[in-house]
Image 1: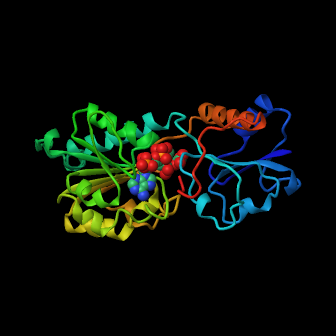
Image 2 (image 1 turned 90 degrees about the vertical axis):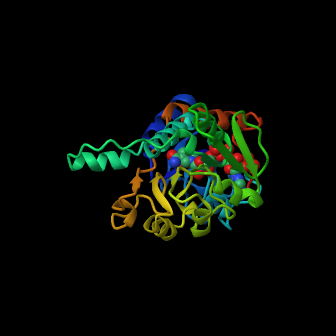
Image 3 (image 1 turned 180 degrees about the vertical axis):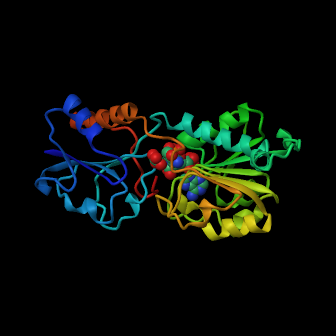
Length: 309
Ligand code: NDP
Ligand code: OXD
């Protein structure tokens, strides 16, 4: 029996050390040094390529090294009946709320304009937008989005949230289902995206979505890059329909140096750091899940594979 680690984003060494300390009886291996494929019982993965997980006939669980599990559920070769687990909480919601709060304040306080004036050594007292004129909409009201929405509401913004199912969150106007999406957008000067990537949510922030927002709106993307149609975002900024965007996630990561987002004046790019991994919390949850599975108990963060999140 082995635990196999696969990631092209994060080094394996801290994981090797944590497993040697906490679960020394189960050998820990790092792809491609997997040992016999039939020995692999637990796969710890970040964005494995299609077909990767089909190689291990005795897999007992797939443990995704992220809160988002894409692209795993859409892999046609994904072994059937094997539980897929994701990271839940592990410090992400508070960090995502910090990021969203910073982005909204940055836009509402017109910091990009003030920074541009500084570069020209110009003293021009631009007023911030009124908080009351700055309604924020949060897409996704799950573990992360609900905390993001509550934080923004506590700061005085008029916050609405949009999810698949109806929610009750104090101080947040809740919208549910695709039929309410346009209405949700039309009241949101800033849209913060905290959705998971699924076939239903891919490309959801497209030209039609931007057009439904009030003119001079802003986008904050902390979900996944493929939620945004890149060229539609640039067109909406070019036309003035959108005023700015702060983007943490991209279709291709690292974002290629030739991508227009890097240099577009109204866009702030950050390199997928809205909620950096807190190694000790993440490792503790993964190890706890393997212990639970070994004892035959239910694990944390079980993903509904049909739903895709
Ligand atoms: P959850 O599964 O807890 O929440 C997902 C939310 O999205 C739910 O409220 C769900 O609605 C809603 N949703 C899903 N599909 C739809 C749909 N078709 N229409 C409307 N609403 C929908 O996920 P988390 O909050 O833990 O994580 C959200 C995402 O954040 C991750 O999948 C990942 O992509 C991203 N992320 C990004 C990070 C970064 O550093 N940038 C770090 C961590 C996560 P309902 O509740 O009704 O089911
Ligand atoms: C995640 C992420 O999904 O880091 O955890 O994006």
